[in-house]
Length: 230
Ligand SMILES: C[S@@+](CC[C@H](N)C(=O)[O-])C[C@H]1O[C@@H](n2cnc3c(N)ncnc32)[C@H](O)[C@@H]1O
Image: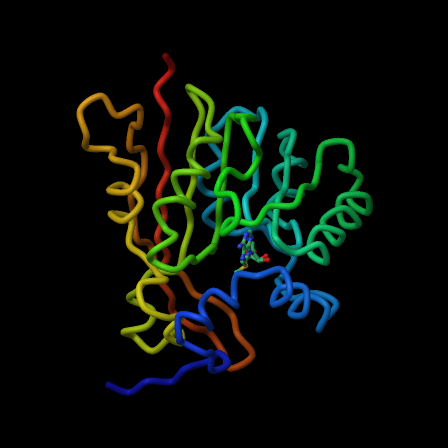
């Protein structure tokens, strides 16, 4: 199969994988350019939040805050957390510039240190987009993130689908880093008797991503779960 990787080569060793989830790595990456991401909210977030009533939201691994700011503009009270202080200070600046500073709080979160992103606080919506963690950390991290959803609230997980590596659209992030919807469902035990989770969406939609080399067809993993009210 013809492969045309469009991204930089990465170190795929286990050490390399963990290194890519540290504050040092991300602070350096964010410091290296004025804006790393597009500034636009993720398409999947916009699609999945459209039918929800605004309340409190937690944006996990928020990056530069485009999703958090978009949510705030829709009326959500957002807590945005990330391992990178450089990213977090950009979130605060952008929230100020966009006039939503009163609805966006920032907080430090290191998924590999303490998987619960906001202590014991819970939210109406917890969203995590494109946080890819090594296989051995996956269960702890995603269960920790899911624990922040209040009864009646939603968890939205968006990720790159492993198909992108097979198709050559994306470099290999490392063994097991990209994942399918089933991985989230299994980790959270949605099929187990007494599970609090109702599956609202478990999908693998495609989209066209604009890159410097032209349009790229990519596939996402999208999971939206509702924690049943007690
Ligand atoms: C691919 S970016 C996605 C950013 C944002 N969610 C978005 O969709 O634009 C991954 C983000 O995860 C953050 N991150 C990486 N390792 C982390 C960790 N151990 N704990 C918390 N956040 C982490 C990075 O700082 C970065 O902002």
